[in-house]
Image (cartoon, rainbow, N blue to C red; front, side, top):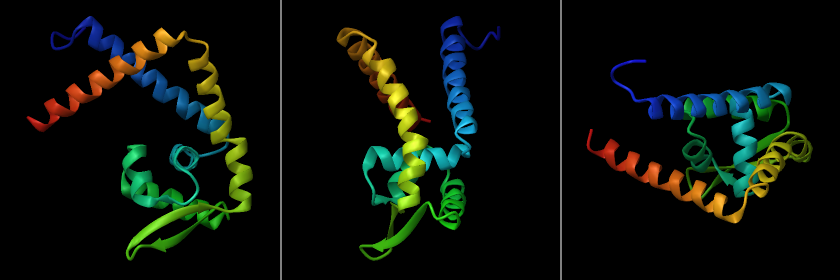
Length: 145
């Protein structure tokens, strides 16, 4: 172990990376790229007609990566984009896109919900509160860089 990290930090990083790897594996099994899954997942969470800005912000992926995946999904007939409020763009699912989403992102969301529902309400609250605390503290420390 490096002298710069703690056992706890190593464990958190390991778990975070393993979760990311599990989502990558899910995307592969669902025959989607990671970025395509992020887009469809975000649309599921925020509704059809999701702002492109929100997809980029909420997915954590670069604008370039999201735009590349959007072009591919658009070429496949899964989504279409429309201008909204001047220069903004909204992303909509086509009928084919709705079917694709039901067989991919929605299946993943069902798995996640099943896992969360298997926890007690107290466990759910602990997980949410600690994750929120970590995020807020991390964001504050990043501002100080």
